[in-house]
Length: 479
Image 1 (cartoon, rainbow, N blue to C red):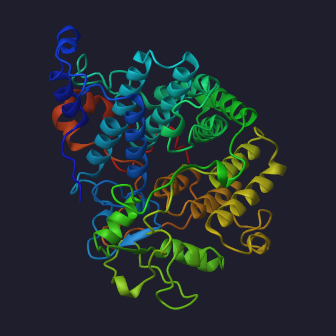
Image 2: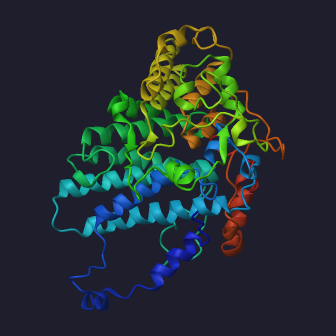
Image 3: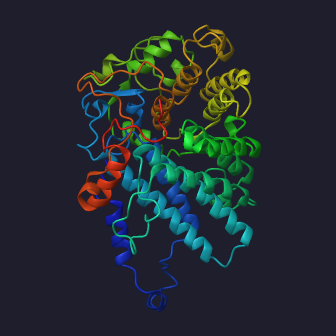
């Protein structure tokens, strides 16, 4: 298993320190062995790194499925009990996102701007594609950590120890950037080198607008950002968001390494039996008689029998329900945002009378559930929607609880959004882990190396957000 121990700052500083002045570099460049990597190569490298990081279930890098309480562990239960630091999980996520995603994207833009062989329209479209992935990544980092290096990040030549920017200020800037970049999508951009949409500009615009919708909804409870949130949601809806699962921002994996789905790598290729389905999820789906269960889960306990392992406990692998064959298929696609998710955000916005009226929220809610059923190939969505426990008019709880619960269920195999659904909508039902009994985290703590190497800025950032604790609520998490 990969274990990254260097900070982003260290990596970037080393890279910068090895660069010569351009005038000497040009004279020593071998044209048969180019040192300047093409923008499309860097774009694809960043794309794969982003999808892999958000999809992996390697406990050294990504424990989002456990934070969302969809899965729990067997032999080693530290992560399900919210031990972040034994394996340096925040450090590894931080390094991966800054170094292998954001830095590659920034370099891709620099090289794209310097490319004299492409048209201006192609350059602008490629930069817009780069920008959309960068904004997704920055937003995810803010939503995960809070205040982070932003304005001084990715520039180790000038800022070896970058300051941390205010999270709300970063998010506001990201909304402005995203709104500005979507109109620049005018041709195929990276074309066949684009492994998300193959150069389909219309789908990239939907991706950009769907991300804008998500981000607008995410900060809708922040009073100081109400106007910007509303404007972002309206702009996204008028610009055109996803309308089917065919629009999903997805990466198709192959059956051959190194381009297989990382879950297959983590569980099948490595021969691991580290996870079972958590009782948090199984109990809820059993209570709702949810037809997606045989698509989400294996039937290793017998046909139609699903039993989740107690969350955070030392669970015997053979005693509880396993993940389905589809989830561990090496070719199973991964998504950054999908149609089902978008529908639930539209339901949220309708309840706020932004993208419709509260009366239309039920329609978006139904479409979100149906989209999830369609994606997994599950039958009987219509009957499920008629259940008194599911129907929008009769399901228990506020609109936040109804939307949040079904969003959480639909985000199976997308652990980050499952966890964020709970943080955003505060629906009941999550369990305390059996061993530590610690509360569910609301953020990642900052990397230990940041405390050691960038201490002054780390200390200021920690104080600004209310303490570097797992339970500190971030600026957008108001309930």
